[in-house]
Structure formats: C-alpha cells, structure tokens
Length: 302
Image 1 (cartoon, rainbow, N blue to C red):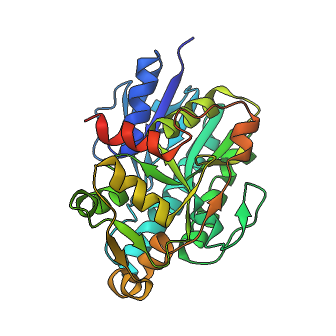
Image 2 (image 1 turned 180 degrees about the horizontal axis):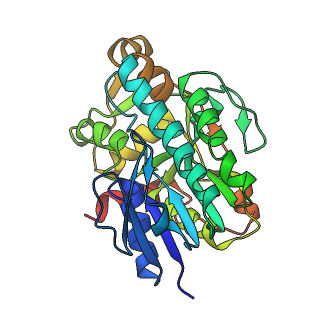
C-alpha cells in the first residue's frame, strides 16, 4: 500500500535520492520547499525563518523525512556560518515537529537527519548508539538537533534520528574536495592518517531511511555508517586506487588546522570509530559494506 511521505531537503544529495527511491517503489512524495509552493498534493511550503508551514497539506501524511540543513563542508567556519549550521538544523527541526504535534492526523513516523558528529572525536574508542555525546561544535549541534524532535515524540510520533557518517557519492562535498587531488596522484593522508572515518555509501543512506520507514520497532538514534570504518590513510589510498592513481600526497595536521580552522579539526582530523549496532540488529543488510565497493559504485556510475 502506497505511503504518503513528506520530504524536506529534496534538492540536496540525500533528499533527492530518497525522493526518487520512494517514488520508484510507488509511494507518494510531498516536497517540502522553502520558496512559495504550488500548494498541490506533491508540494508544500515550510520556512524556518518566518515560522510558516503549510500544515493543512501535511495533514494525513504517513511519514515525514526531514533532511534539510546548511552544508558544513566549507573551507572555514566563521561565526555567521556556524549559526546558520546550528539554526538550520535545530530551529528548522523544532518548527516541523511542533507543527506535526498539532495536526489532527499526524504522521506515524518522523525520520530526522543527524550526524556522527554527535560523538565528537574519540581516539582509541569504539562508539555505538549507547555512547554519550562528545565535545565540540558539531557534537553540541547534534545534541540540540535531536532534542528538537521532542515535540513529535511527546505527541506519540515514532522518531528516528539517523546519524549519518561521511557519505560516499561523487556529489558529496567532502568527496568533491578530495577527488581532484586523488585524480592527479596527490591524494593522501591528513595528519598521521590514523584517525578513523565512519563512512556510508549513498545507496545505504537511502536503504537505511527506507528500512527505518518500514520497521515500526526502530526508533531513537541509529548510526547510518558502514560496519567497516577505515582510517584516514586507508580512505585516501582507496579513493586514489578507485581513480587509478597512487596516493602520494600528505597534509600535516598543523597545516590542515591552519587552512581549514575549526572545520578541519572537526571534520578532517576527528577520530570516529562508529558502529551501526541498532540498524544491524533490526535486520538491515548493507549494500556496500566495504569501502572499495562503495567507491566503485559512486565514481563509476557516472
């Protein structure tokens, strides 16, 4: 039976892929857009700045998948950029969940993007959904982000917080920045290269969201990461090998901090060995559990 699903962030990497997959399996998708919407059955407006949501259109939807948020992979974070990152996630999520809680026919499930940034940098430690939050800007944002889902949970809506790792896709900003160097043989480790990267193929991001949608017993935080994280050195070698080049480059940690500032510390030099325990226990089978397979699919499909 087809579901009615509202999706935010539909122009982004994950939102566009999820919307396509939902339609491909026969579900009806309502696009949540920030511009003035057509106010039809397949489009509704929401605006975190003004606080407006087309609540009447959202009535009776089976699910809402919330994927909107300011991109974090920029060269440096100024205070204005950091506030956009925080407010686009926290304030936008709170606006939607408060709206859903008021509906006469609310959705049965609210799936909200989150990130493994929740755990902060945890060298030598393996973390899972039972682990507490770490330190740092992204960890603080993730804690607030997930807490903003409380109105939906209190209204009896099943809430899933999907903590995404580094997404493997040619169009992902982090891959986009590394690919040109890898293609000329200068891809390589950053810092000592021992820091763990918890990654996930775009196909498994979509698969995990659909699995969460269809698995009523799954709620709360789930790590959407491959069960096989790699080190920064291993990631650089695999990316270079995927484009048929050696990994001859190296960026010392102090240079990365100087060039990228806080963003470099929290995205490039952070150490996150994250395990997707809950989604594996719920029966999800990863399409690309190994990095080499994920990179071949991402880079060879276009």
